[in-house]
Image 1: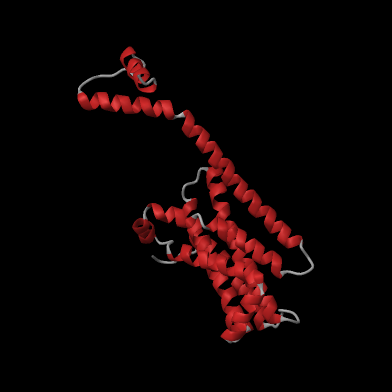
Image 2: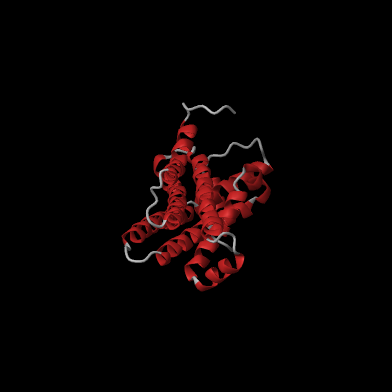
Length: 240
């Protein structure tokens, strides 16, 4: 498929790459401050977290706007979260520690916040690998269960982010409030759907009764409000 700048998909793709372009420009012109490696490491991690938050934002937006096409952009944003998280890890392993695995192992063992970052990254890797349509089809019901781990990853990310910063807690608090709101929205929708399903149980039973009657006699014309149906429903709801 040709890459066209007049499509929404391509425009969002370019916007998602702007943080990387910004980082490259700052590296080129030496604008990363007195500790460039640490600044680079933190900035890439910040963008990984932001894209993870944007991925979680898609469902509320889709629910409110009723736009089913948002699911495709959720996958895109999730892959960009994986992309920036991978760059974040590469800078830590290669640039910061020069692939000196003994030092890296000691650092991981002594720094509790790294454990949470590692947990989040492993989950994000699993989600990225299983994101294609063929993987979703192959995994079946297990796919949805796996992708619910994004909530665990988001909590691990915010803990990782909070523990590694020293001094200014304004940003961690801001991102914590965002994730709480996003998760609270999902909990509210879940409770609403459960209540709706319970209200729909009688209607479901009525449809099942009609299906049984029509299976016995396909040519039978049935009035859903008629006495026959009401009697059948009563017989089903009220056991002997």
